[in-house]
Image 1: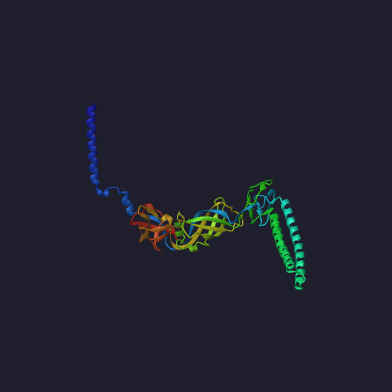
Image 2: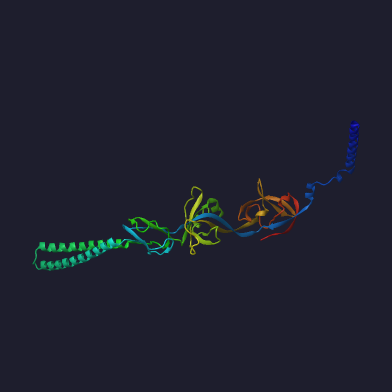
Length: 376
């Protein structure tokens, strides 16, 4: 029974297969279902377009930088003695000449008074020696004294002059040392942390505290060679100085404007140009040794192309140019301007129209229907 059933099944299957083949031949090739490729060749693809034109645009370069104090001075002791007191608070603003520390002054006051007295004595000795010289000189003219007496009087007068000069020099040194017992700010700025506590012995050259100037503030950074070319500065380094900059931090939206004040005359080992800018920092939004972002801007004009109109292929970027209702690919040379546009270096000209969307559906010579596009 099983074997008969199997032969019956084969007979029915062959009959049905033959009938299907005959029906397919009866329909003919004209009744075959159309393929997807043939449909796409006959359809019109709607898309948005963009008409190219010359426009002004900005080239922006954002670089990392670091702030530096315009002036940074270490206050040091200039005389030996016990540090008696700190006269200003750490972290506060001080003006140039403001007292910062007091060193014991007793010894230096005594030296000052002694030197002052020595000057007075030297002046008195000089007055006597001067009077004696005048008398002896007159007597010598009258031939009342000998040459030896005249020479002695003149020598005493000269020694008195020298003694006074020496006494004045010692007095000046004693006065300077006394003044140095008060350590003063050499510049206006903010105090750092003190390095020596009161009560310690200090000697000349001992570092006591650092003073930082915050306004204006320097910003050091480097411009890579590719960005110099992008800004039009490559080979024209004279334009770098006084170039405007914007300095900002990620943490806040505040932007400080300034200018480049110095540029190296050569590229460094990384093919970058080291420069230094100066910002006013009047609001003290930035501090020394802070990492910031520096923005350089150049204004140019050119043929702008929306980035979304470009397809990148192994052979390079292409766009679909719309002409006479047809879309055809064209190779272009472009350079990025910002996140939205490229500038065309070659391959397109003003007035030409390019496709903005449906790019993956386009093929050479396909029919398109331009919609309200983008023209700015």
